[in-house]
Amino acid sequence: MDALRKEEFYTIQEIEALPDGKRGEIIDGQFYDMAPPTRTHQRILLSLSRKIADYIDSRKGICEVNIAPFAVYLNNDEFNYLEPDISVVCDPGKLDDKGCHGAPDWILEIVSPGSRQMDYFTKLFKYQTAEVKEYWIVDPGKRKVTVYNFAREEIEEYSFEDQIPVGIYEGFSLRVQ
Image (cartoon, rainbow, N blue to C red):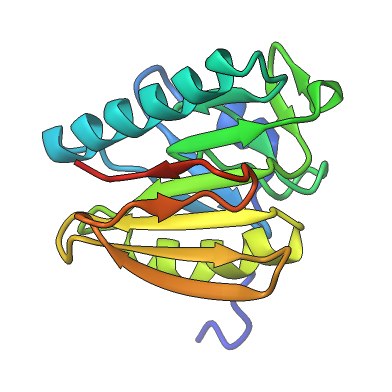
């Protein structure tokens, strides 16, 4: 009888050793497999990332938009490695060729059927405690966007038809299409 089961903790080394084509994330040492995204997911990802990048470029901003797969070493430790759908990083000192070291300013996750629990609970808590300023959960199934502005301690919910204000950029809003 196995009364005491050994709990496994994964590190970034296990992520780096994954075979080509296999992706995963590590949150507090727990490994989470990543399924391939749907076409709807990718369409929304491309549309939003393009709008955000165009806005930043038009204002000659220093922030950088990165899309998955893009490594975020969230806590600068061996036990937290995530690949948010969209990461906006405004501190160039956090970026190198491997990814982002520390919390991005703004993260957008697009919900897939298999990621609902992760996006709404596990990642929400992790991003908040890591001091991400703003976190959007884009839910194509519900056609809703939940915006967590951690810097202002505000939570708002919008439909895909709404113009959604971006907390880290005064005067900028987006609509999900």
